Image 1 (cartoon, helix red, strand yellow):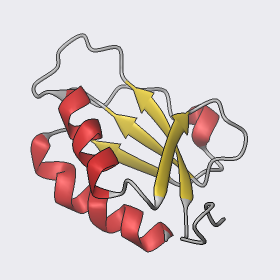
Image 2 (tube, helix red, strand yellow):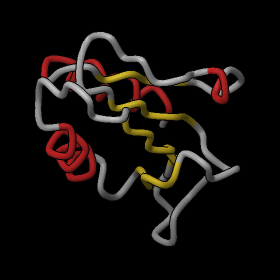
Image 3 (cartoon, helix red, strand yellow):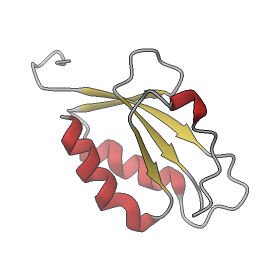
Amino acid sequence: MRNRRGEIEARIGLKYCGGCSPKYDRTQIVDDLKNEFSNRVRFVSYEDPDVDCILIVAGCQTACVDREPFRNIKTIVVTSDEDYHICCKEIEELL
């Protein structure tokens, strides 16, 4: 999909875990991703039917988010600050 300026754009559905045991600032990593991909990625609700991918932002290594609803959709899982660069690489592969 292309945005109004003709740039390639992906729609990524954002799903946070319940936050029972967060080990890092989950909202900060999402803000960083939004800044990194500001003109190429649109972060939307995970319930949006037109997503290209789901980004699961889990607060710890347990990553207990139910993935069954996303079984037919590419998912990227972030469980720590260290996953940021891996996540960026996976998003780049979508574009």
